[in-house]
Length: 467
Image 1 (cartoon, one colour):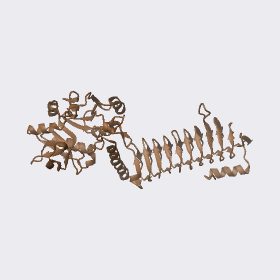
Image 2 (image 1 turned 45 degrees about the vertical axis):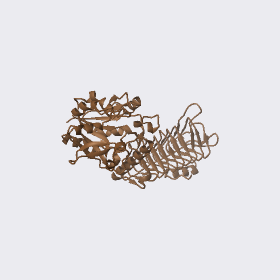
Image 3 (image 1 turned 90 degrees about the vertical axis):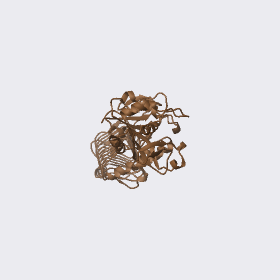
Image 4 (image 1 turned 90 degrees about the horizontal axis):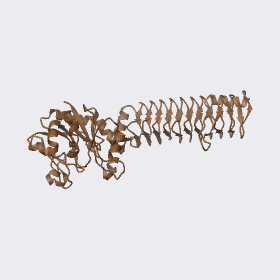
């Protein structure tokens, strides 16, 4: 049997008090409508049909062409919204799954149970229910002696006996398509809102003596619909726990999951440890055996195996295997920290590469720079990359030694194994192997070093840097 899906996303969401359409509000870094689309995609034989209305153009721009759009020009209820999809799906699907873009916690496996039950049902529809002590305004599910559902009673009109019912209607349905299309335009107009509600189809089926089935959700939180910012925060907390549990079951250690925030698109390798107060956002990929945090933010970055990020911000950057940063440092977009490289306390790198095994001391800044392998950047070094009109690049050769407090006024090139004395202001290129010092920096010797500089070079080459 062919299955089609309808996702209702036309509501204005006035209780969100926002200029952004409700279904585009982010949840764990993704617009909530994308969760609804993902939940039905594996269950259907056709592209999902997304019913749009308020903010339709913004929704189209966000979702793209992965769905079929149907516009509900007038907001006249759920029954009216589904009616708009009849010409799109009629004679193309045998079953129609109907869900909502503001229910992002629904799992594909739950919807599959709903569809499978309707495949076995002799009647025209099956609905998703939940068992809960807090009704949250859901309608009560009324069953007959045989267990069939005969009515959905809304809270405002329920009797005291009906209010005691704990089985609630989640508002998610799977219909026999032929029956749906022949009845959806016969839904009566409900007063006082003058809207057409899908729930009335349940009473219509019961009146015809047809069986309506119900499938209880195993996790009641899946039925959480988002209508306010409070609901959004509740859903965020639930989804965060799901995400954290997934990664812990995949081999990631979290010291304190309650203070670990991981967005939906993030990928993490096994045996990595996430320390408290860490936020992983966007399209971040973290390798195996890393130490991330505490007190760190990593966003849209790639971190290789066996790296360390301590109390630092990493955004739009790449850290290669065995590199480390922090504490209190900032890798900005375009930063690349190569294999085994080190960035110390309060360092900042933007649009620059720190070569393999290179070391950058604390309180230093590299912008628009290329640092060769094994170079040592002393504390307080700054690349002066902006002249007030445009940016310029700095090149630092392999195994160069830049003394503390140095200013490199770009564009400038420091040669391989060159040594720059502490406090120098370098305004011109320095040849390979040269020693330069002073303000402005001048070359003392070219191509040779005295014993003191050779000792400093050996210290740098073995990984030591006194800063």
